[in-house]
Length: 114
Image (cartoon, rainbow, N blue to C red):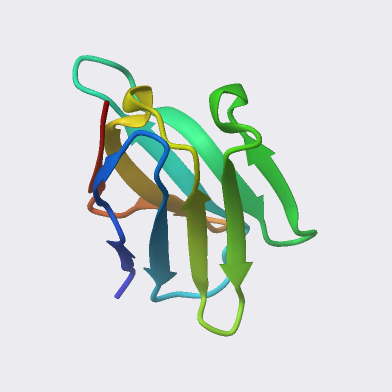
């Protein structure tokens, strides 16, 4: 069964940190990462990890504050979020691409209070 299980969201004050985790139940993943969606806005890419070469991609708004990493043995991707801002408040969705499709996690809420 194809599954992405997310954890690590929550409520934090501005300037604080959170770490999101996303564990995949399947192999053959080409790219794995995170999108986020704030109320009334579109879903935007936050960060991605390209498994074939280890390259990473970040949205300009999170560069220098967020770090994406992957544990191949655990088939898990992490998003370390530091210096959080109220504008980072959103539902964060993990995704994974293989050669056939894109899969999504259920989403985890991140709320940053000012």
